[in-house]
Amino acid sequence: MINPFKHFARPGLFLFDAETAHGLSIAGLKSSLMPKCRLTDDPRLAQVVAGLRFPNPLGMAAGYDKNAEVPDELLGLGFGFAEVGTLTPKPQGGNAKPRIFRLVSDEGVINRLGFNNAGHAAALVRLKARQGKSGIVGVNIGANKDSADRVADYVAGIRSFYSVASYFTANISSPNTPGLRDLQAKDSLAELLDAVLAARDDEAQKAARRVPVFLKIAPDLTEEGMDDIAEVVLARALDGLIVSNTTLARDGLKDTRFAGEAGGLSGKPLFAKSTAVLAGMRHRLGKNLPLIGVGGVSSAETALEKIRAGADLVQLYSCMIYEGPGLAAEIVKGLSKTLDQQGLSSLSELRDSRVDHWRSLKV
Image (cartoon, rainbow, N blue to C red):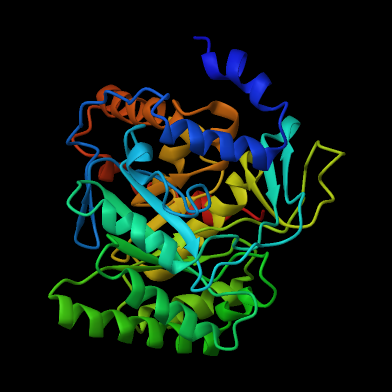
């Protein structure tokens, strides 16, 4: 079946640089030019994670809707949830342009955006305006590049958005803010999570509503690094882990024009590495802690493979650049079709069925 986006719209969109094209896609969603997806909820796909009921397991990852401009429009494309951000307390412009590069032959993307966003206050206005609407919208929080106290920035994110967030993600794994990944080190992570979870518990008491907190980690971790994260996480009331952010690795790329650009690599080239780390964390954390698999999800089959490797939910972003706005609905339909073919009553029956396979891979 011909994908109209790939054959007609994408060539025109790719005439623009990647960041301009991204802005055009946001404008398109705002203008309602993109038709809404008419999916019927399949109860077999619904997942209850951290007390939230997700109508299907597919979410839009952070990084697309950095300023919380179009979360409801994203839900209208068929996503079961949308994550906005990364949001920092103060507005910041990010790194110098150009800072997004398409690796077309690899269907990958390298970015070194650097948490460019309009800050907490601007996003909060938008998220307050959608209060009362249905749909799960998570808020991804980070620290300003010039912050004197990065832990305090994450705490500020919890307090700023507590009334409007369905869940929070503490993003400590972007490679584009110098020193940020140092927060994944054992002692630093313990300090961060203790402060963030204390702020969440304080706000929960005041609001009589407990908002889940997830942690987003990098795919470039050593075995010892994964051990340390698992130890810190299991000792605390964290609600889940998102695996993973972009990678600094450049193994096996075909692109010769942009492969050497600095930044984090995402899209199809990230799939194997991120899925192996996902399975490694599932093995370390046991069966109960929710995991969200991200990295290279481009089809129903790759989404299913994340679930087989230990994910309860999955997210995508970069592959939509190549497949178009219909990708979410296509994947959700494909998940239902797989359940039909295998005679399964719930998608959860497939979780963890290939953990051992994926964690044994050296990628």
